Amino acid sequence: MKTSVQKLALLAVGTALFVVLSLCLQVPVFENYYLCLGYVVMAVYCWCFGPLAGTVVGFFGVILYCVVISGLRGMPGWALGNIPIGLVLGFYAAAARKMRSRPLALALAVPLVIAVCALGILGVKSLTESLLYLQPFLVRVGKNFTAFVADAAVLLLSLPLCWQLERPAKKLFPQLCAKAKE
Image (cartoon, rainbow, N blue to C red; front, side, top):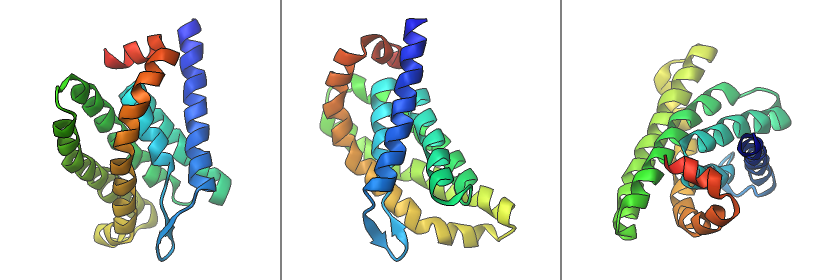
């Protein structure tokens, strides 16, 4: 019981951090697009607490962020796009921990992050929005391309932080980190 309450509290904190970083630290990169720094929290949760924790933080973080800033506009595709991103990153983190070489793990992470962001943002998000707004799929892909580039960049830049926070997370939450590795 204690572990499940801890996990629920940890997920709530992660979701809140996703929203706070996304709202308070807006770094403009393109015409009308800001870096979503909430992805840093999602990546850390995927790395330290497993694929399910990272996916939950990314999914519900987007929903809460969208409700706060604009109602539900843009939310369904973005939230659904975070599901494959969170799952793949979380499973990769478990595999990367077993690698002896961190440079090799990082080198393998780069194309993986780019591919899974393409799947999540250009694929799932664009398809969802295409169906919701009755627009051609390729139009939605074009509109989501800047989000793909920015989100992939944030996730890639988050990886060194994930390695740095893994040890403190193990000390603070040993049972939750142990379950993430199973």
